[in-house]
Length: 191
Image (cartoon, rainbow, N blue to C red):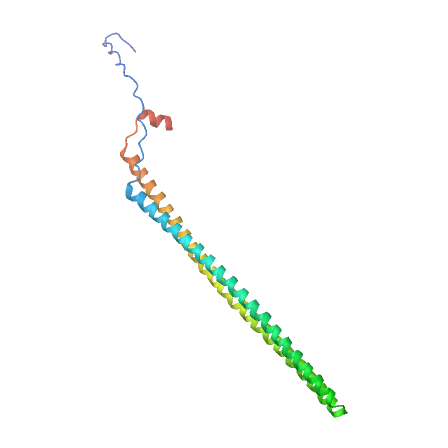
């Protein structure tokens, strides 16, 4: 449709391609945030060291208590065995004095009574030993439960702080992206 009456259009100006702008630099954390994280890390390490020291002290105390209880148990067993031996000897001496049938029946009953008394005392010693073993175990279970609860809370607190720091960084990055204009060239590269 060119009739020749229209004037020619001027040539387009040549423009140099603009180089893409450098990506925005993420803000460096300020000193107070770094100090806060260092303080939290130090506090966590101190808590762990205190828990370790408490565990070691509890373990030493438990071992000392076990050794003491073992010594007491052995001593009581020796005393009970000696007491039973002396009673048996005394009974044997009495049996030698009484040779008639009534005395022998009484001696037999006395021997059975001594045997039952000895069994009763042995049972009592074992029951006391059982109580001594169970109480420290219950204390240990309670200590471990408290330690696990403390460690769990400490871990959850650290995880939550990391999550909040990550969210804060995302918010800052989003605001930075909104305030920095993008060139058409960089947008074309992203597409």
